[in-house]
Image (cartoon, rainbow, N blue to C red; front, side):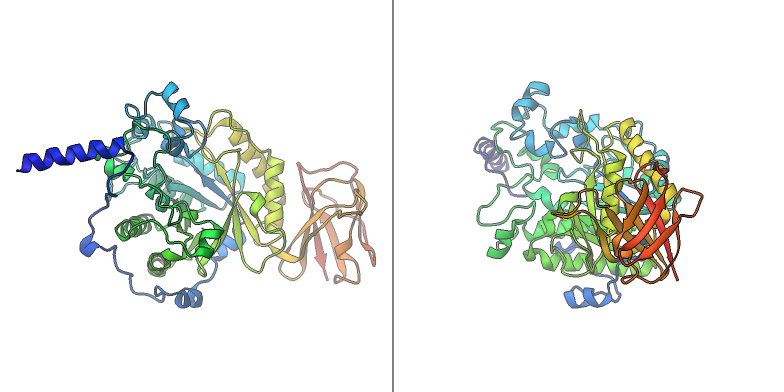
Length: 506
């Protein structure tokens, strides 16, 4: 009888594969089917409790510049994007088949032994980030593909047991903190529910029971529910439920708790997969667990999430600079912006210049935001030289002008510049302030000999006592009139990029 059942299950599995109808999701067996309870502390799993107890950490408010890192198994094929594990069974099926073979013979799992990280030197990474002027670092602990870059007791599919055979997150956390920076992690596991469901591949390894604890297997998207990658605005308005079942959500929480307890992250970052209001219950348990643990550690920590995933108790993140607020906000936020045109490493990655990065940083801090610049290491653990050069150039600028960045706040006006029907030669400035007597004006494009800051006119600003140009030894001559603060400046820009004026008020 047992043999017949085994044969029947095997036949059912084969038929499911052929029909593209996935077997049920495989999840971890947890005690009483639930993740660990919330530890004692001031935070309860309610919005009211989170709102009453949470404050944005000062290290984030003052730190301004962070490094994000997309690095994982998807760095091996180095094609398409960090979403290669999804597209190799869909839109990139032809490419994958021609280069690597059929995804039934060579599936995503077969890239794992090639993710060696043999040249990964965490101390060198940390030194580079410090040189760039970063104050916090956030690597992806697990991306949508479901492979953990940390030492997990809840899965065998992690970097300690496979691929690099070392705890990449643990090693980097020690080096980053030793260099004096804060250390966070991002977790994208919520998206893993249906992320790799095949859309074009008829033959593949995704539903093979041997790999069910890695692939899931991925579930077929349900049109009556939102995507696991996060609901659209229309789906939020329609009140569509998230697709993940409760067993998966309990496992998600347990995996998050393992990361929290093992690495004590200063920031825990989540992608769009947790945005659904239907997930509020599990998200609140996660927040209460994390923040009460931080109370035990005596650390100021924060979640960082997108859109309105969390109503309170989070730092709002905007993916790419184009989505960042265009005006000064009453809350603190950050942008995760890739240094290249993709987040994960791909061959031919097109990079921004250091000047572009610096201007985005300035735009953000003038509006109460931060910049978290994503870098893209290779599968062997090296950070490409061209990315390093950009980071080092940013660092050179920071060493001259960092006092106008770190520990500052947005001023009354975030900036001034040419508007429609205004003289196109009008000066473009961004502003920050420090304390009650110091303002900083960032001249976004150099104009020599004389510049005018209209926002600092005598009828709008307290009396100016002194003006200096950061990186320039001599104090500047100036006149404060009703038309603005008129500065006499060198003909040539003495700085490496955007120049900054320090204005001391009476």
